[in-house]
Image 1 (tube, rainbow, N blue to C red):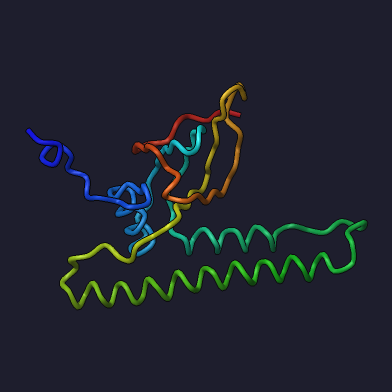
Image 2 (spheres, rainbow, N blue to C red; image 1 turned 180 degrees about the vertical axis):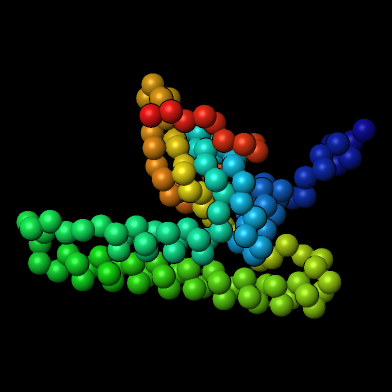
Length: 160
């Protein structure tokens, strides 16, 4: 058997796993969500796959939920709202892209899984680093697909 026959992976120029990319695209386009564990640059990241739109909406909500103390610098509230607005706009970009991709899918009989993606988004993420003695809680997490060297379905158990 030749290497070409043995390796069923389609070529990927930037190192992205095409199967993981398809799952992320399905999450972005159709709301697919499930637990996943990733190996990224020497650490393990484990959490629930979510769409980019959900990620940015939740990030905006988190920022809006932060209250400023009496000693907060002037302009902190306006800055927080400005940043939340930026994340809302990013979510809208994802939502607009989803609408376009779903229209294309209906035109082609559902033969595609959405646009190419560059990032993966997780919620309830935990990060395991060498020598840390346990998981570091992260909450929302975003990473480049081209930096993922391995992945599996399911999340690692995390206990505080």
